[in-house]
Structures are given as C-alpha cells and as structure tokens.
Image 1 (cartoon, rainbow, N blue to C red):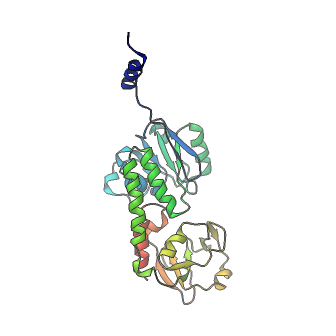
Image 2: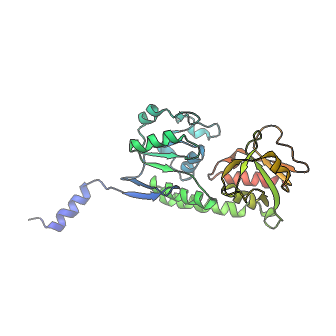
Image 3: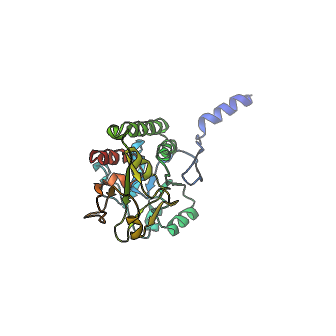
Length: 269
C-alpha cells in the first residue's frame, strides 16, 4: 500500500499551487490574491508607471487614459478615468487585479469596484518611502518580487543622487501652484513637500494640515514667497519678486518617474 507521506507528495505534485499573496495597500487594506496577477488594469497613470517599473508590462490588459506612455503600450486598451468609469468595459477586461487611485478616481466607482469582488490595490502614496514600498508590493502581486525590490532600491538611490547641487543650499520659501484661479496649493500633508525639500525649496504652507486646498489670495501677500513652482500653462499668479519655476508633468504623478521631475526642477535653480 502507498504510504500516507508518498500520497501527500504525489498530490502536491499534481495539484495547482496557490500563492495566497497578501499585501497592505496605501489605505491599510489587505489585498489578497490566490495566485500572482496575470490581468492587470490601472486607473491612474502613476499606477501604470509602477507596473512598468517592476517589469510586469505584459500583464496589463488596460491602462488609464494618458498621453505620455512609452510606445510599447500603444496596443494596450485605454480606459477613461476623467469622468464616470465605464464599468461594463472594465468587467469585459476581466482583470484579476485593479490598481486604483482614491484621490483621482470617483468615490462611487471605487465603491462599485469593492462590490465586484475584484482585488483592488489602492495607490495613494503619502511619502516617497510609500512609493518605494508600493513598488515592492506590486512586484509581489505580479510575481516579480526581485524586480519590485530592485525598482524600489533604484528609485531611492536615484532620489538620493538627484539635485546634488542643491543639498546644502538654504531652503527657498516657495509657493506650489496647482491651480491659478481660484488659487490652489499643497499643505503640509503632501508627498510633494519632500520633493521640494530635496530641490532646496520649502513650501510656505506646510503649517496647513491639509493635502491640497484652495488658498485665500490675500494670504499669499502675507507670506514670504521667493519662488513659485507651477505646472499650469501660461503665466502663474503674479507674486512680486518671486522666481518662476516650471514643474514638468512627471512632478504631478506619485510614481517612479518623479526623479525626472525633481532633476528638471533643480536644473532651473
């Protein structure tokens, strides 16, 4: 008779292996997969860039609509995230992992996604360290663990080596213009503050415990603002004596390409 041990070994060889991968997303939710993701759908450009960074490009079935992707994604379907999500189309794509962006996607769509039972990784980095951690986690979810760790390490190394000429400079009081009219900026609870500090700049509104908020125009006159960083086309809100620095598109996305935006910012100093 076959021994129990040999029977268990035989079953292990013929039974499919269940990975049972578990990670925590940026909202602290557990994301659990029975096996590594093979059909990934992204709902934000920075999420797509993270998937590319860990080398899981071939697992993308649809990506958030965006104009700055590499040519290798030309044949990947786009999904519009600027308005109401095309829910029927998303289901047709049959993803086994969706990477969403809580502050960029509509709450009603995210609530619907939660009801579908599709595993969702909420990408909402609060710091540069969170971006590196997400690269590692997405590496695990996609079966690219080593590549995820490498991408995280390279991201931090590139950040540390960027803007070498600004690291000893006295911080320049800076207004970060997200929107001109009404004026919108960042408070102390935003990952962009770390980028500004690495460029030798200091957000004059770090005392406001917010992420993004609308600022009173009169309060701009009460702050010592020596530089304005803006990604808006045309002239920014005029602030007497302030130097104007243009933010490249990469600076607006909390992903691995932030380093390019940081270097571009420093090149203008």
